[in-house]
Length: 216
Image (tube, rainbow, N blue to C red; front, side, top):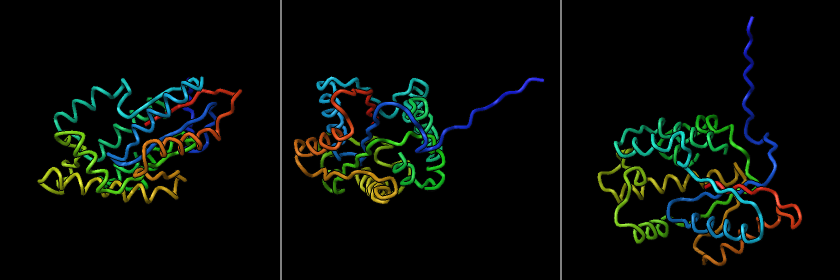
């Protein structure tokens, strides 16, 4: 008789991996990518071995995601599940899935395998500031970025505002639930980076330079 034993997936908060995990969150236009890139370069300059990871970078689903987006095949549920697959394959967002109408409890159940970060940063920018930054940085909005798949509005800019507003509301809901460290994204880039480095520095010791993971 042959028996197959399936190991139970470790749930959120129970992992015991070495190193430190720092994550950044925020709406489009909050400046989170800039701050993460600066932190990454700083940690490398300080001599820490750093691994950077971001959404949609898993070879397992990257091509599938790109093709589905191009052909506009995603439903809110398939979008969420494919991102969860990408997340799992990289061994690592709630907010966008819930903003698209996925049940909050269901989304948390799907992502319960996630590793609890050492610090989760939330760069909060008021909706009008974030929208102005996006509008000035690119000539056109992407279909899913603007939430056009939800059919809230035929106008691309109006749909984008509605979608980003829902995402921001969900992030605000998650701050206390997940203990996110909020940073005012309207401050100067230098001030935000200084605050981020001070916080990260508390968890890193000079002589114990463990691997640092920076997912986006």
